[in-house]
Length: 130
Image (cartoon, rainbow, N blue to C red; front, side, top):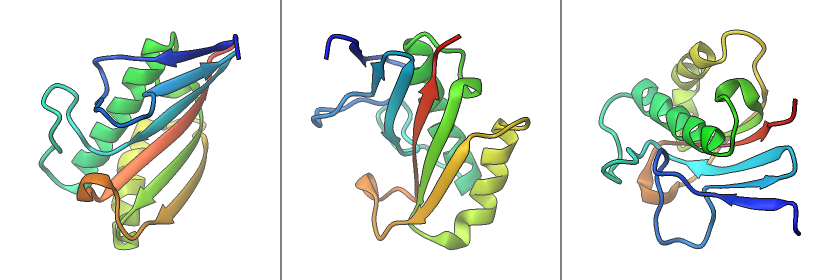
């Protein structure tokens, strides 16, 4: 797979687990799932679910930019994982504020548990072509 690149940045959380922060395959970038973790401290951000959703989106932006993209405008698909669908409307409001124009395709699922016992996680696919 000569046309793939593993993306590494300090602008998104990283750990010793066996996965890349993102993988660029041609013009497509696959961003790993992120919870509301501050990349500087490695700790979950405090605050409400909206604040945590903002941090997750900031983490995705960090990977997209490290791969040569502009940010959320390049995102074409997102999967949202929630441990409690009662948070859906609040997450949706924070998410929608970051995608005010034409939002990407999206799936939202309730998960029994997420790594680190966080309440929200997102992964994304971005298109970095012209």
